[in-house]
Image 1 (tube, rainbow, N blue to C red):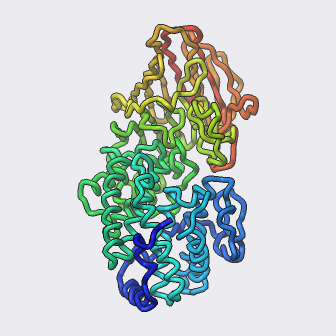
Image 2: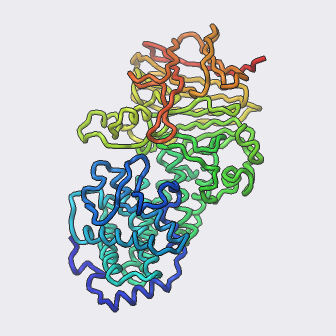
Image 3: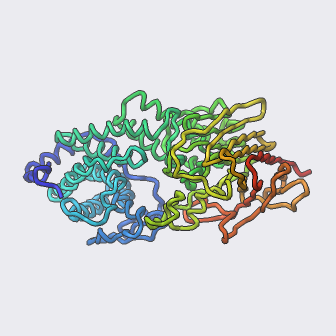
Length: 582
């Protein structure tokens, strides 16, 4: 608990607080007056949180009528609790207040902020999620916005005093070394939260110092979260998008001015464009759910090429190249042809290849995985995110394999077989090993063929992969697996084909699938030396032949396994070929 000597605001008189209120009201902070730190991407069904309750994602709707038992609300789910104590439930009411000017929305949020402050500002709790770094940083953003909007719209002195007590506690929590972890995206939210909160009250010297420390931490976060080529280090296009756009807001509001840092964010914005599939959604690598990128809900970026894709050709400029290679991040992409407007976007051939292990955060067991879209159709897909849910017990043996979550389907979508890559002895890739960085090799275009290469080391064996794409014609995958410890292993190559394809009668030459209209066949042919298992679709025991597009949902896919048994070295060659139907 904080001592009186550590407090900035507790001893202020009502006259002092009124003077501070007037200073805040007269300051010009567009980042707070426009409520940019309150998420506007909320469904219309949640427009009246006060009457209908608050619903976060797939969690149940929560009645937030006062008084609230803050310690027990959402206590059984870490993610839900973090959103509650990060004050995410305020986003829609604040956006409605900014849009309509109706003070009832602002007052609803102030009442709950005061209630929360009275419980936690100078009292301890056993609920660790209350001061969890993610909740701390996100709540600080909303606290700063509430104070600013309240000061401009007649906040009562006692309400402001209560919120300033919360500021005191937040300032002390930010000062703890344990609150800032630059190795994950949580460090960003701590850094931006303390920067905005400190700047909102910078007339107080200690708060100005808080903001300065936040800016230094933001600089650290850009350099640690975004690699030199602009890729986010946590293996997930969704976290890349979220962090990049959040950093851009900081740039737009003058919180980040260093040219080297803004240059790295420009590269991150360029990379985001390559992560957009022809169907307009983010490619679902790592912990990425279905995110539509071309519906107008996302702000324009620092990249003209990405803006061109997101706007259907209305803004920006078309990308001049069809091959995007990001050697530090370990990403390579093909989009051929590059669209010149909205009409051509969905017809491009597209391939996303990932070859990196920068750390465990949001990383699935998916080394050298790739996703393929062609002829206006998803072809090779992967497991998706499914969501998080309850965590495994701390002593669960599954944690030794890199799993944190209890839901078996969540563990399945993280597994290697839910991706298009290789296993040895059927075991998932080890995500507890030391980070290896990028494993991307030479990626080039030779005539009309795109050649992507990567290599990853696993405990006792090495995987080298070459993907050759002929847009609209076919794809060849060469997987060279070799034991480095002389041990014979069973090696498996996994492919997951879209469930929208129909399995044709298997010809002697290989497996074949067709789209709904039956305009073509896609045939998989393999070379001798490997057996073919499957295809399997929608198996529950064991889980196989599934993916999750939106959190909490599942749909069937075609899972094919090629296997070479008891060998130290094998080269798989898998050829997918389109054949038009006469």
